[in-house]
Length: 169
Image 1 (cartoon, helix red, strand yellow):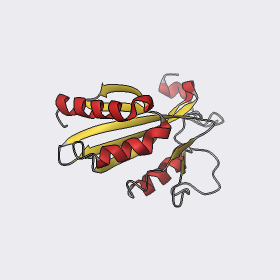
Image 2 (cartoon, helix red, strand yellow):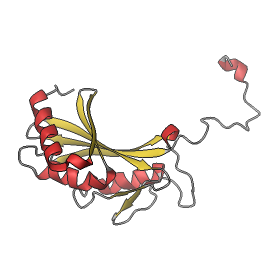
Image 3 (cartoon, rainbow, N blue to C red):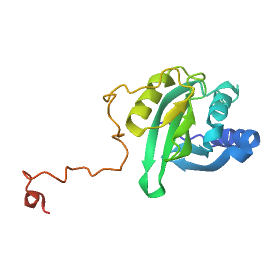
Image 4 (cartoon, rainbow, N blue to C red):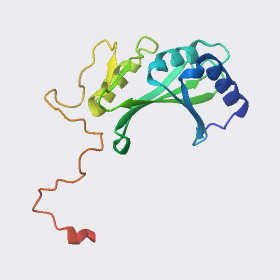
Protein backbone atom coordinates (compact mmCIF):
# COMPACT_ATOMS: atom_id res chain seq x y z
CA UNK A 1 0.00 0.00 0.00
CA UNK A 2 1.22 3.50 -0.80
CA UNK A 3 2.15 5.68 2.13
CA UNK A 4 -0.03 8.69 2.77
CA UNK A 5 1.49 11.89 1.50
CA UNK A 6 -0.19 14.65 3.52
CA UNK A 7 1.46 17.46 1.56
CA UNK A 8 0.26 15.97 -1.76
CA UNK A 9 -3.24 15.44 -0.34
CA UNK A 10 -3.33 19.06 0.84
CA UNK A 11 -2.12 20.30 -2.56
CA UNK A 12 -4.82 18.28 -4.37
CA UNK A 13 -7.54 19.39 -1.95
CA UNK A 14 -6.57 23.07 -2.15
CA UNK A 15 -6.46 23.06 -5.95
CA UNK A 16 -9.82 21.28 -6.27
CA UNK A 17 -11.53 23.61 -3.80
CA UNK A 18 -10.05 26.65 -5.50
CA UNK A 19 -11.15 25.43 -8.95
CA UNK A 20 -14.48 23.72 -8.13
CA UNK A 21 -15.63 25.07 -4.74
CA UNK A 22 -19.36 24.85 -5.56
CA UNK A 23 -19.00 21.28 -6.90
CA UNK A 24 -17.16 19.73 -3.93
CA UNK A 25 -19.50 18.01 -1.47
CA UNK A 26 -17.03 16.32 0.91
CA UNK A 27 -13.41 15.39 1.49
CA UNK A 28 -12.08 12.68 3.77
CA UNK A 29 -9.35 10.10 4.21
CA UNK A 30 -10.62 6.56 3.63
CA UNK A 31 -8.25 3.61 3.95
CA UNK A 32 -5.21 5.84 3.57
CA UNK A 33 -6.53 7.44 0.37
CA UNK A 34 -7.86 10.94 -0.17
CA UNK A 35 -11.53 10.74 -1.16
CA UNK A 36 -13.33 13.71 -2.67
CA UNK A 37 -17.08 13.62 -3.29
CA UNK A 38 -18.21 15.90 -6.11
CA UNK A 39 -21.57 16.72 -7.65
CA UNK A 40 -22.13 14.45 -10.62
CA UNK A 41 -22.30 17.39 -13.04
CA UNK A 42 -18.69 18.26 -12.17
CA UNK A 43 -17.19 14.77 -12.62
CA UNK A 44 -15.79 15.18 -16.15
CA UNK A 45 -14.35 18.64 -15.38
CA UNK A 46 -12.77 17.47 -12.12
CA UNK A 47 -11.25 14.37 -13.70
CA UNK A 48 -9.89 16.34 -16.66
CA UNK A 49 -8.42 18.93 -14.28
CA UNK A 50 -6.75 16.22 -12.17
CA UNK A 51 -5.28 14.68 -15.33
CA UNK A 52 -4.13 17.90 -17.02
CA UNK A 53 -2.80 19.94 -14.09
CA UNK A 54 1.00 19.47 -14.22
CA UNK A 55 1.37 19.76 -10.42
CA UNK A 56 -1.13 16.96 -9.87
CA UNK A 57 -0.68 14.79 -12.99
CA UNK A 58 -3.20 12.02 -12.23
CA UNK A 59 -2.42 10.35 -15.54
CA UNK A 60 -3.95 6.91 -15.01
CA UNK A 61 -7.54 5.81 -14.44
CA UNK A 62 -7.10 2.73 -12.27
CA UNK A 63 -10.76 1.79 -12.12
CA UNK A 64 -14.30 3.06 -11.99
CA UNK A 65 -17.31 1.29 -10.56
CA UNK A 66 -20.86 1.76 -9.39
CA UNK A 67 -22.39 1.58 -5.91
CA UNK A 68 -25.93 1.11 -4.63
CA UNK A 69 -27.35 2.64 -1.46
CA UNK A 70 -30.91 1.26 -1.19
CA UNK A 71 -31.60 3.02 2.12
CA UNK A 72 -30.87 6.39 0.46
CA UNK A 73 -32.52 5.40 -2.84
CA UNK A 74 -29.40 6.38 -4.73
CA UNK A 75 -26.55 5.04 -6.80
CA UNK A 76 -22.98 6.25 -6.83
CA UNK A 77 -19.85 6.26 -8.93
CA UNK A 78 -16.28 5.83 -7.75
CA UNK A 79 -13.20 6.71 -9.81
CA UNK A 80 -9.68 5.78 -8.69
CA UNK A 81 -6.86 7.80 -10.23
CA UNK A 82 -3.11 7.36 -9.95
CA UNK A 83 -0.24 9.73 -10.61
CA UNK A 84 2.72 7.65 -11.71
CA UNK A 85 5.04 10.66 -11.60
CA UNK A 86 4.19 11.49 -7.98
CA UNK A 87 3.18 7.96 -6.88
CA UNK A 88 -0.05 9.31 -5.48
CA UNK A 89 -3.66 8.07 -5.59
CA UNK A 90 -7.05 9.68 -5.18
CA UNK A 91 -10.67 8.51 -5.10
CA UNK A 92 -13.41 10.66 -6.63
CA UNK A 93 -17.03 9.84 -5.79
CA UNK A 94 -20.36 11.12 -7.05
CA UNK A 95 -23.93 10.40 -5.97
CA UNK A 96 -26.70 9.69 -8.49
CA UNK A 97 -30.47 9.59 -7.95
CA UNK A 98 -31.74 6.07 -8.55
CA UNK A 99 -34.75 7.35 -10.53
CA UNK A 100 -32.41 9.36 -12.82
CA UNK A 101 -29.39 7.07 -13.13
CA UNK A 102 -27.33 9.15 -15.55
CA UNK A 103 -23.83 10.60 -15.43
CA UNK A 104 -21.52 11.86 -18.17
CA UNK A 105 -19.15 9.40 -19.80
CA UNK A 106 -15.44 10.00 -19.32
CA UNK A 107 -14.35 8.04 -22.39
CA UNK A 108 -13.20 11.30 -24.00
CA UNK A 109 -10.80 11.80 -21.08
CA UNK A 110 -9.71 8.17 -20.67
CA UNK A 111 -10.63 5.83 -23.55
CA UNK A 112 -9.97 2.92 -21.15
CA UNK A 113 -13.18 3.90 -19.34
CA UNK A 114 -15.17 2.45 -22.27
CA UNK A 115 -15.45 -1.13 -21.01
CA UNK A 116 -15.55 -0.15 -17.34
CA UNK A 117 -18.57 2.08 -18.03
CA UNK A 118 -20.25 -0.72 -19.98
CA UNK A 119 -19.73 -3.11 -17.08
CA UNK A 120 -21.10 -0.54 -14.61
CA UNK A 121 -24.15 -0.02 -16.82
CA UNK A 122 -24.62 -3.77 -17.12
CA UNK A 123 -24.54 -4.43 -13.37
CA UNK A 124 -25.89 -1.19 -11.82
CA UNK A 125 -27.98 0.40 -14.60
CA UNK A 126 -26.06 3.68 -14.57
CA UNK A 127 -26.42 5.34 -17.97
CA UNK A 128 -23.31 7.14 -19.24
CA UNK A 129 -24.31 10.12 -21.41
CA UNK A 130 -22.02 10.42 -24.41
CA UNK A 131 -20.72 6.85 -24.26
CA UNK A 132 -19.85 5.67 -27.79
CA UNK A 133 -21.56 2.25 -27.53
CA UNK A 134 -23.29 1.68 -24.19
CA UNK A 135 -24.70 -1.85 -24.09
CA UNK A 136 -24.68 -4.95 -21.93
CA UNK A 137 -21.47 -6.94 -22.16
CA UNK A 138 -21.80 -9.72 -19.56
CA UNK A 139 -25.53 -10.19 -19.05
CA UNK A 140 -28.08 -11.08 -21.71
CA UNK A 141 -29.63 -8.17 -23.60
CA UNK A 142 -33.16 -9.20 -22.54
CA UNK A 143 -32.31 -8.83 -18.84
CA UNK A 144 -34.25 -6.00 -17.18
CA UNK A 145 -32.62 -6.14 -13.75
CA UNK A 146 -29.19 -5.01 -12.59
CA UNK A 147 -27.56 -7.80 -10.58
CA UNK A 148 -25.29 -5.74 -8.31
CA UNK A 149 -28.06 -3.57 -6.95
CA UNK A 150 -29.13 -4.65 -3.49
CA UNK A 151 -32.81 -4.84 -4.39
CA UNK A 152 -33.21 -8.59 -4.34
CA UNK A 153 -32.80 -11.26 -1.63
CA UNK A 154 -29.53 -13.18 -1.82
CA UNK A 155 -31.34 -16.50 -1.80
CA UNK A 156 -34.32 -17.77 -3.76
CA UNK A 157 -37.24 -17.54 -1.31
CA UNK A 158 -39.29 -20.06 -3.32
CA UNK A 159 -36.87 -22.97 -2.92
CA UNK A 160 -38.38 -26.01 -1.22
CA UNK A 161 -35.26 -28.22 -1.29
CA UNK A 162 -33.37 -26.16 1.26
CA UNK A 163 -33.22 -27.05 4.96
CA UNK A 164 -32.38 -23.89 6.92
CA UNK A 165 -31.86 -25.88 10.12
CA UNK A 166 -28.54 -27.00 8.68
CA UNK A 167 -27.41 -23.37 8.78
CA UNK A 168 -28.49 -22.54 12.33
CA UNK A 169 -31.69 -20.80 11.26
